[in-house]
Image 1 (cartoon, rainbow, N blue to C red):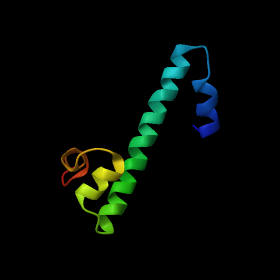
Image 2: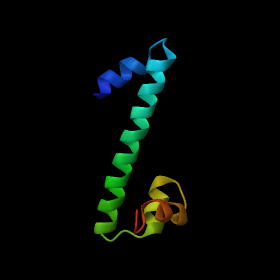
Image 3: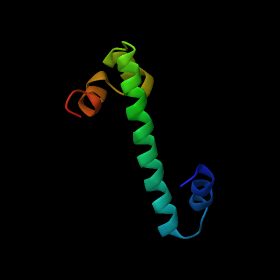
Length: 69
């Protein structure tokens, strides 16, 4: 689903369509976050730096993206 499709679906009066678009946005955000956390770690960023950039604690970002995840 493209961002234009998402924009159109979010603006719909049909809650089923709008909620599916919200789900797609959540999945996309998770993918973008995971890729950028991995990139930051490969470039030597600390968990604290990543947490600060995301507006969360280092503990929460490590629990979500640390080894084994």
